[in-house]
Length: 427
Ligand SMILES: *Cc1c(COP(=O)(O)O)cnc(C)c1O
Image 1 (cartoon, protein in one colour):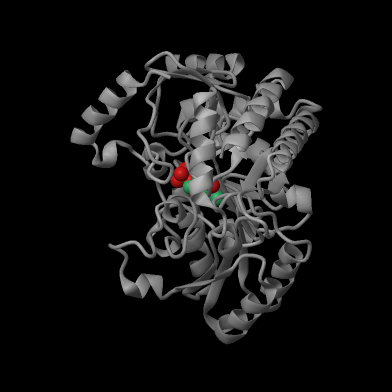
Image 2 (cartoon, protein in one colour):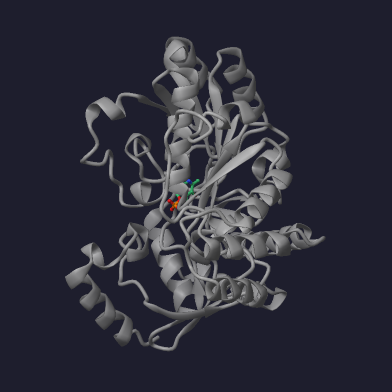
């Protein structure tokens, strides 16, 4: 595979952008080598600046559930842009997107649009603190909730990938307000809650762990979290930035039938443009300015172009059969990869919820960050590069999800499984 142009582009980028990338995991640090620079993307395919094509299983880390450059989403974007790209005044489509989100996500009565998942989570935490008049929050090790100060403690995604223990630049006083426990660990969570109940504003959780690889919740975990948070007057926040409109049209909460107090969204609801949202019970959301005293604002929030892309994406996803089809294809690829690993005698622990797939190079089961970290990441790096050579673009990190879109065909999947058969035997 020729990569001269990507390598030259990366050299130039490093002169003017720290590490050459605008978000750390893009840099291939954990798998080695240089990142590919992408020229364009269409449906399930990416094309780099050297002209290589890849079947894309990263999907911009989540948003592109309909595949890249989906015709009707593109049409909506162009139509919106022609009417101006930002007003700084309300427009009717914002209400329409809010309505669609509220219709879809069971626990959301009212929703506020922001510009990223990070912003959504940051604002939801501020709101939870204001509502409960408490300061501390509890999160789970290996869960990633964006890069806001109080949430970068024992976080997943790039923090896990790069092995950063705790990020410099965060005041100790902030970090102290964030308690962490292992994902799926009810005993440890209970202990911590009993000790800190009076000062706990919220428990925030990825209802399906998607930033330490894919780690599904145990059967008891989410129902128990709902029960214990109600008991102690703690708000339960579902960070559905990745799971929202992915594992079910109504998110993980619709799939598992659990009602959190607040929900954070992002990624898919912007159809590939920058967006985020947080919503929940009306009595809590009414505390947001200007309805209430909790300040949160944004120059580009509810941006008409992002809103148009999100609206059209949700309209497409609402069509019957979409999630059934995604489930079927995801099952097919998971089974194929598992079978290929078994045939090559490679320990490979698989996880999957809908179109979010995980595969860890370890004998034991993966239920939390500690067990996820037992995966042989050097072997993952070899797997990643082997697959890349064969035209398959997986996440350049063990601790990220493999994602499918509606644009992935049975033939893409067969091609992927057949490549994996060969690569598993070589690593
Ligand atoms: C991606 C992600 C975020 C952060 O969203 P950004 O738009 O990158 O700020 C937060 N939480 C979860 C669960 C995510 O997957």
